[in-house]
Image 1 (cartoon, helix red, strand yellow):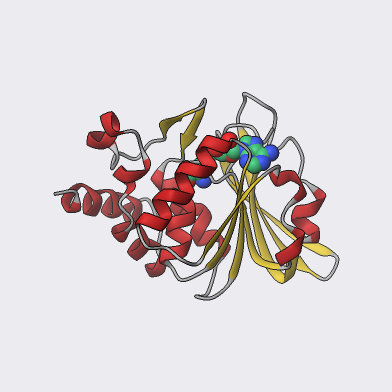
Image 2 (image 1 turned 120 degrees about the vertical axis):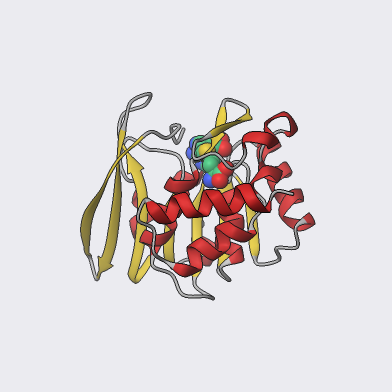
Length: 205
Ligand code: SAH
């Protein structure tokens, strides 16, 4: 029943310029409607963010695709996500075959996402309740790090826990305003920066 709207969402994302087949395929398979409140199921495949409670949102599908493509991952790569939220981004990464580590600061969101991903059968995702600003040192380094909430500056843990050649995709900017989406690629102690455009994320608190 949800297959047609989901295909239309993927078609739109492709038209907007996303080319990575792994990303498009994952978005075709993950049931986004399960990640939003029931009364919003009908609009789960529109290309916009939706509220998930606790003042938080599930990101716009195109932005999820853009950020995931920018990570340039291979199946089996270790990825750290800051801001689990609904768990949708983590599910996309898991569907692509990544080993996913995800951190959420709101207990209820952490619990709901963990239960939903288990129900959907994703086993390669590890959940942590806590402050993403510190990263997750225990499993570092990560080939990819993705922040889905925006800090005012890049947390040092994000660059420190990135593997050689790894990519960090992160929105950075003032609270309540627009941010710049950055992609950083690590070369030793150098980080090559690429500006991916303007975005609007909730703050990383
Ligand atoms: N990736 C999510 C989008 C989440 S919105 C999804 O696919 O649905 C951003 C999330 O970051 C919110 O759930 C918010 O509670 C969380 N967050 C904000 N500050 C945080 C912090 N310091 N550490 C961990 N999570 C944080």
